[in-house]
Length: 370
Image (cartoon, rainbow, N blue to C red; front, top):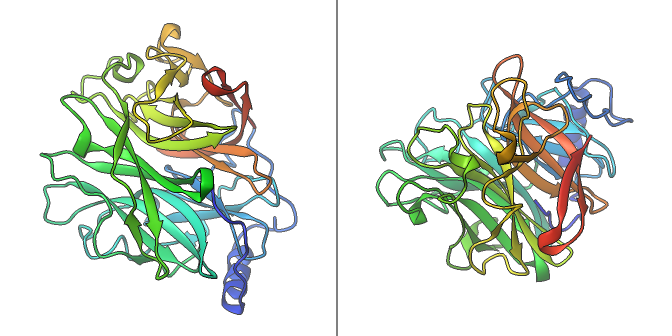
């Protein structure tokens, strides 16, 4: 995600809370943790669905939120320093221990919390855009919003979802929020409302942030990606719907790019695609890079994997099933990513790396380095 405004939010309460958070971690406050060695999982985030933003409390560090795991609804970790995002295996706390609000099924988990920070009328707030099960609604997934002036707690969920399909058994999930030209703020998500047949659709819309911390739609949703032509996304997947999900948009050097996941998340075939969307993110369908038949980042074996004809690059560590790649910027404006993978120890973890971009427009090239 491209994050807005880096102005810190200062205050005694935030400073006390930050002190407690750092005290709960290993003694790494003065130096950022090194990035994980390619094959070593020991320093990776111990949860899936990782999303990172800079802390705005004077600490110069970063906070990474994840999907429900380990008994926590929204686990989070603190890492990095200055322009280095870093990584950490230590879960410090739960940002939303009460869950996602009154509209959420009792006891339901929280998926893919998309984090965002904004200063509005002099007040800095942290926002989480999250997926949860809507109660009394046939297991339907919807997207909710919660905000807090603290990154660690106090998130207040809005009483109704910002997106919730009413079309058959379709879902809305995997919201991500980013800032584009002229300060416009956009949300991308997997949009079951506008999917057709056995496909998945990814959509975008502009958001309006209110003084009281609530969020409204500021434009109509527009579909920017459909899965029906993606050969790699339905390779050996007999689940019916061809899945694409976890969209994360990046505006770079005058162009929009869309990072997203495809295929079945629980398999080695789950991979990351990239599309070129041009100068406007809501101007119709984005174009696949390098084309509809190849995932951009994928596991390369030796275990079962996508054929070489359906994949382009690997990622550091060559972990199985790399997806849910989230794009954001460090304090110096340089792009970083986190992504899920299937851990060798079981379950899923998340890894962080620097995004290296060369070229421009539809000819841009993307690689990840630790």
